Image (cartoon, rainbow, N blue to C red):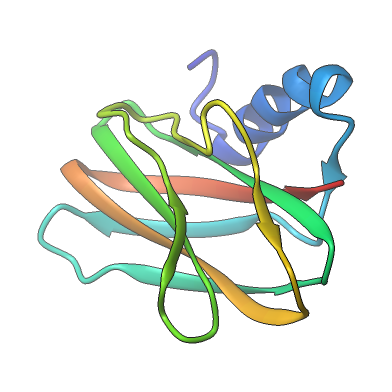
Length: 124
């Protein structure tokens, strides 16, 4: 990571994919601080019917593994990252699409390390 400002870094990472994904940021950047021993944190977002989403995360270097999961309002996993690194994307090779409006969430957990991070949800 070029800086320890996770909000700047997650924006750069997501913007780097924008030309290919044709997506734009949805709402504000979520920020948190967590350790591997902490309970997961959830950040809510409104998913719209017939739209697709990606979640991007960036953590300080003290976090070696930041994990992201997108869940629907029932708690079912709609997508999750499959990497063990501080810059996860859900989905790495695709998007999570919703058939109907939903109160979705991005759930973060730390697999290794502790510190601050930022998460952005992008939509088509």
